[in-house]
Length: 266
Image (cartoon, rainbow, N blue to C red; front, side, top):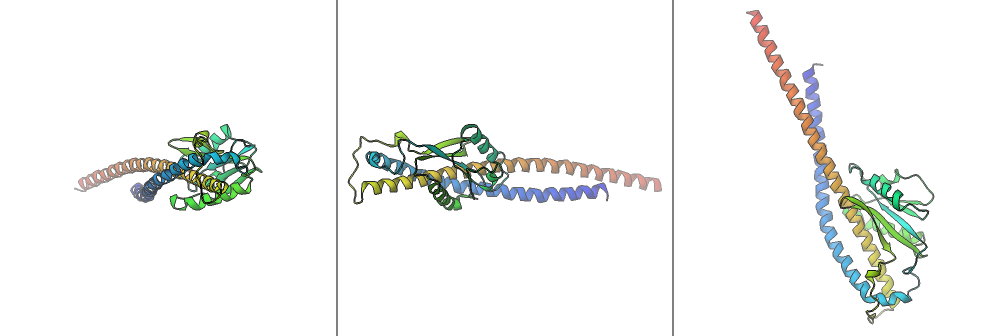
C-alpha cells in the first residue's frame, strides 16, 4: 500500500475519532448545564431545611435515638463516577480518603470506577453510581438504605468524600454542625409530637445534603471530562494538520515526478 493511501486511512480515522470525542464533549457540556440548574434548586431546599433545624433545635436535647452530641465512629461515603474519561477524578478521591479518612469503620463506595481502585476489604460496601443528575435521587435512596443497615442510628456519624471545585474534600453530615442548632429559640407547637417532627426534618436534611453533594460531584466529573475532551480534540486537530501537510507534500512530489517523466519522454 502506497504512503499516500496510508495517510488517507489515518486521516479518515482522525475524522472518526474527532466525531466521537466531539459527541462526548457535547454530552458533558449538556450534563453540566442540567446539573447546574438542579444544584441551584437543591441548595435552596437545603437552606430552608437549615432554617427549620434552627427553629426546632431545642427539641434535639431530648431526642435520644439520633446521635447528636457524640458518636463512636464514622461511616465513610466516597462519591466516584460511573463513566471514565474524567482524568484523575476517582483516583484523587481514593488518595484523599487514604490520607485523611481511612479507618476500620464501614466505607461506602458509590460509582463503579471506584470499585476497582480500593482493595476488597471487609468493611467496604459497593453501590452503583449515578450517570447523571437525572438518576441522582435513586442513588441517594440506595445510600440511605445502606447507611441505615450498617447501624447509622447506633452512634455512628457520616462523612462524605467527593470532588468539588477542583479539589477533593470531606464533609461531615452527621452529627449536625453546632451552628445549625439554636437552642435559644423555643420549639414551636406542632400538631404531631416533637420527636416526629425532629426525625422527619433530620431525615429530609440528610437526604438533601447527600443529594447536593452528589450533584456537586457529578458537576465536577463532567467538568473534568469536558476538559479532557477539549484537550483530546485539540491534539486530534494538530495531528490531522500534520497529516494534511504530509499528504500535500507527497502530492507535490508526485506532481514533480510526473513533470520530470513527461520532460524525459519529449
